[in-house]
Each structure stands twice: as structure tokens, then as C-alpha cells.
Length: 574
Image (cartoon, rainbow, N blue to C red; front, side, top):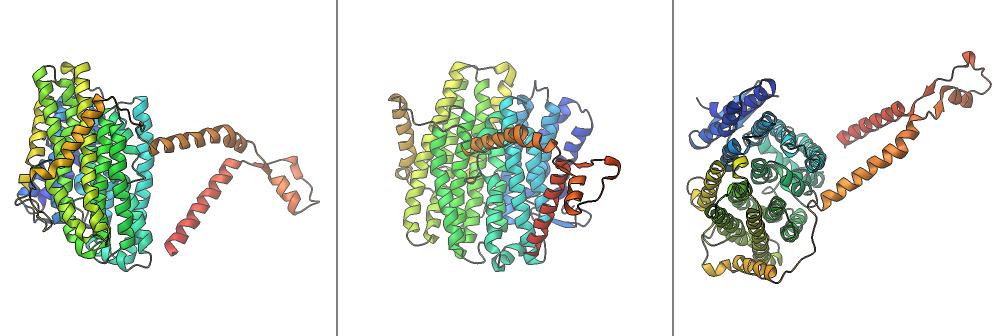
């Protein structure tokens, strides 16, 4: 039936997640649900990609469809979540919190997949919020102090990002007079408040995409989350922010050189600064988190080029879709390698995990005959659309980025090898099952360049594979890292979380000040009815002698509430 698989893409994991919360299902059923959560999406992508489903009873009435960018994003999302679900079958074998982990996984995936099918802003935001808040359970799953701390930052940044996204979408819908996504970019472009809307959408979705300076939750969340959860957080969910940019930013309707330059500057800074921060990390998953921030910075450069020149927007969308596909499978393989390393009990298995990690690292850095080389070659050609002067600088910046990425991922391979030398626990982590599932992820990562035929529309900027001579930045990065290790060079270490740690410290300081100074003062009544009456109407006797005091907490709560209402009404009028 036409459209049935689109509905099942959302309803199957959603219903399974709700059932997991309400009923005590056997562990084998929970693991089966995680391993098969993406089956309807796979059927929708390959069997009925042109289907459309009208769902009048859902929310305010919506239509589900699989457009061209959405098809590519759903393809790698379904693939990576399936690999993570299979991996989780073995990873969670002794997990006492399997029920909670399964529910959060299913609900997060339902939101993640659903937003790629949405054709209106209401459905999109509902799925985006479901994905965001369900993923909190994955971050705090282990309940360790570090996990709780990372969860605090994640949920705080998530709420901040959701407020920005919701505000930007409401203003976009108001400008367009409709919630249909296809009409919003042009309406934003014609709006007198377009700069404000672009800022809200750019930084709101940027929280999810790891955009500077709202990236700090990533390096704290990834090390504490279960390994399969880290794989989908970095490989798939982070791309929801990129997809939001592609859908809602007004690129292609007009040129926005100012915002284009801002994206270019933020993207270039993230690509290089995050690579340096990643080199200084001592935890493999923190290293990979900074790698994701760096690679999302490169994708932000593509967004900046498209905003700078309206003619470049269609090519930028096609190229970034392929870049996201390539990065998702490669980064998923690297994260899953962290767990596979613990299962590598024999020397042969350790060598295999190390060799596979090198291959996945080459895919991301742009090694020869990989999807990364195709993506970065295309991005260099797309740089020709950049403003004068930058079209010459950007290709060299991308070369430096490949060198920095090679340094960063060489550090990851080094950390992996050292961890395998120090300890392993094949029995606890599922042994051969983890290694086998990780090998499937590695195969998907290596096959990305050959998946573009018939699946991904190849933009004109793709130039095919370059010669081996074009891979010198990647090999140079590996050689420089090996030399630095040999010479025992120790760069200045950036703590995992950087800006995020500053936010946590500031919030903790404010909380301490509030509980020690402000809250005790608010509990002491300072204003009484008799005082106000005597001040306004002097000479009136105090009948009954009662001194009905106005406690400060309710008063200030009311003042804050009224202030928020006034600000909301003012913003709607604006």
C-alpha cells in the first residue's frame, strides 16, 4: 500500500518505545526491536521512494513524503541505527538498565527518522523535539557522576536550542502564512526580519550540529554514553541540525553574503580549532567528538558558500548530502571500534581493529579512493562560488583541514592501540558479536563511494577520484603525528568540553550564590500589608493587629511570569 511504509517508519519504533515503557518485555524482545527498528525505513527508501501519505488525523494534519534530500538522510540514518541496534544486541548483554536504554533508543530513532519525512514545520518540530529529549536518557544511561554532569549540559543546551528553533520556525510560518516547509525559505528571504530568523535557525539547529560556540555538549556526552548510542549521536542525530539548515535557511532564494561569511568563518574555525582540541584528548570517544565538530565545521563551510551565492545552493545541498552520508558511516565505524577494541582478546583481532580504524579514518580525512576524497574534491570545486578572494583561500583551507583531521584521527588510532594493550574484557562486551557487527559497519563505510550510483544524485561539482599525489595532506598528517609521538611532543591540553565546562562552572556558581544568598533572603518577609497601608493611607488604625505578610517567593514568581507574558506578546507583535 502506498505510503504505508512511511507511516511504519515512525509508528513502529514509536509504538515499540511506548510499549517498552509500559510493559516488562523479555530482553530478547527488546533487543529484537532495536535490531529491526529501521526495517520500514529501508523498505520505504528502496521499494517505494515516491510514496506520499496524507495523515489528516496526525497533529494538525500532515503529509509524509520522501523528498530528495530526505531520502539520502533517511538512508544513512536507517543504516547506522540498524548497525547500532545489532551492535547493542551484544553490548547490552549484561546491562541492568536495558529497558530504559531500549525505550530511549526507539523513541530517539522515531524522531530522527520522522523529521526526514515531514513536509510541514509542525511535524518536523515534533519529531525534532522527540529525538532531542529522548536522547537525554542515552547520555545519562550509566548514571555515573560524569554522565549526570554531561546530561545537565546536554539538556540545558538542548532546551536552549529548541527555544531558538521553535522561535525561528514560528516566525517563518508567520511570514509565509503556511506551515508547509517548501514555502518557508522564500518567505524568510522576503521578510523584513529575515536576519533575526536566520540567526535563530542557524544557532538553534547549530546546537545539534555542533556549531561554534554552541558545541560544548558533544565532547562531554560522547565519552559517557554507551558506545552504540555515541555512534548514532555523532553519526546521525548531529546531521539533523544540518538537515534543518538545508530545509529552512533561505539559500537559493537570494544571496546573503553577510551570513555566508559568518558561516565560512565559524566553519573554518571549528574545522581547525576542534582538530587541535581533539589531538590533545586522552579518551578515544572525546577525540572522536572533536572530530565530529571539526567535520561539521567543514559542512558549515558548504552552507556558507551556498548562502553567499544563490546559484551554488542546489549544488551545495547535493554535495553536503553526500558528505553527511560518508561521514555518518565512517564515524559510526570509528565509534563502534571503541567497543570492538575491548572485545579484541587476541593479537590478530587487535591488528584487525587497528587496521579498520585506520581505514575509517582515511575515509573521513579524504584518503585516496574513499568517499571522503570525493566529498572534499567536490567541496574544493564548490569553493569557486565563494566571494572574491575566498575562492582562492578556501581550497587551501580544506587542504589544511585534511592534514589536521589526519593528525586528529592518528591520535585516535594511537589511543585505541594503547587501550587494547592495557586491558580487554571479551566476556563482558560480547566478544565475537561486537567484532562481527563492527566489521559490517566498516564494510558500509568502505562502500560509500560506490553507493552514489542510483542512490545519491551526483552534483556537477563532483570531479571523481584525484591522483595519489592529491592525498599528501593525509599522509603528511600521519607522519607528523608519528614524529611528535617519537619526540614526545606534548601540546597544551584542551579539557574535553571547553566552552561547555565554562557554562557548567558558571551555572554551578550561580546556583550556589542563589541558594546561599538570594534564597534565604527571599524566605524572610520584607513587605507587609500593614506597611503598605500605613504608607499609602496614614492614620488608619490597625484593626485586629494582624500583620499579613506577603512572602517574597510567590511575589517574585508572579512578577517573572507577568514579565515573560509581556515579552511574549511584544515579540509576537514585533
